[in-house]
Image 1 (tube, helix red, strand yellow):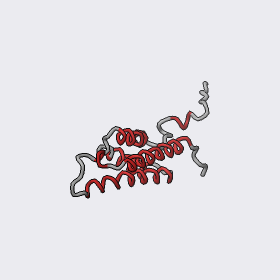
Image 2: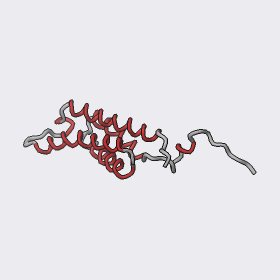
Image 3: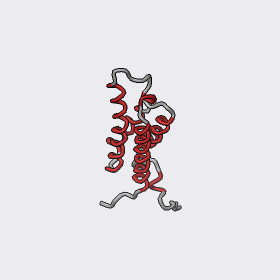
Image 4: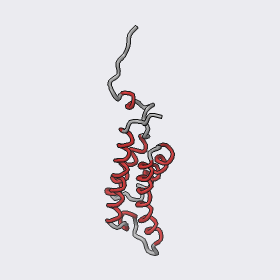
Length: 125
């Protein structure tokens, strides 16, 4: 009979034990890249994926709040752009730089909370 010893933390690294979906992490990283790269309108897709994934698949409240903050910081300039009588040709050109910075900061907050949720050990019940 042979026994296999697992290194500490090996159980939390497998896919079955993963509490944060990969799509949520990728979309959280894609938002600031797309906003800084002047693809702000297309960054609505990863914002929607991050919000839906956080609300449906993650139990951590901090992750949910960070995803909601990201969605709000994205929705405000989008709404302003859509409500203008004579908007610019793209959301990137019409978005105030402060909103771009807020969106990047909110996305960074989501990335940090996702990392914290992934590395935190589950509580004993």
